[in-house]
Image (cartoon, rainbow, N blue to C red):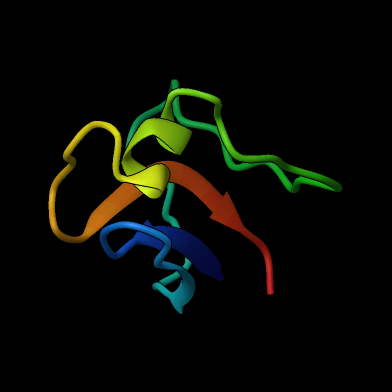
Length: 63
């Protein structure tokens, strides 16, 4: 599985991460057919608003 990670202005990468696991009865794992970047993340991507040096958002992308 992969996820998106923001590495400062203009630096976005996909990184491999372990497969998620269901740990509670209320958990769910879903498979996505498509995804997009949230508009609020574009502020950090463009360098307008500082973010964490390596910010991993909650979205994960299947391999």
